[in-house]
Length: 208
Image 1 (cartoon, helix red, strand yellow):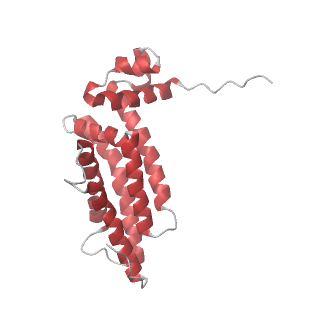
Image 2 (cartoon, one colour):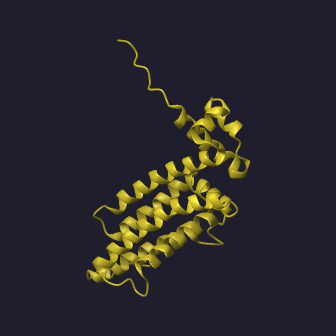
């Protein structure tokens, strides 16, 4: 029986994979289109053909990574599980995203957006998808359990998103557990959600 050849990887995908590898190795400021092209095994002209510029390449990479994780998160929050369990899963996802380098890419782009208005606008639009998703989750909680204390749906979504974005930045800086208990603080929010949900259902034996 003849061997079946593996499907060829298209040039667009090869370049994105190489860009991701070089971005993790060199950072945004040190990213070189020449190195990306070398790693992808294509001429630099192919980067310009597919993405227009270095910035276009980075935005395409981030959009792909961001969309994949947003879809994953949206599917998870759509599951018929208590909200505290879904929140704990979101904390688990954070660990995987730190290990994969996605969080590093995200924070590199946020920092670059401070001084690059065009890049900043694009990153704000992409990050807005996370706040919108969290607003959907908060709106569901409001329908099921009533008012969210003094917060509007949008305010609560903003606080949770900001907590995760800020935590990611501090974790990348290398703060350890003894100085800032970032991971346990985030997970403790899940404990609070569980207490509130189980108190409402008559179960109050959840430890802090």
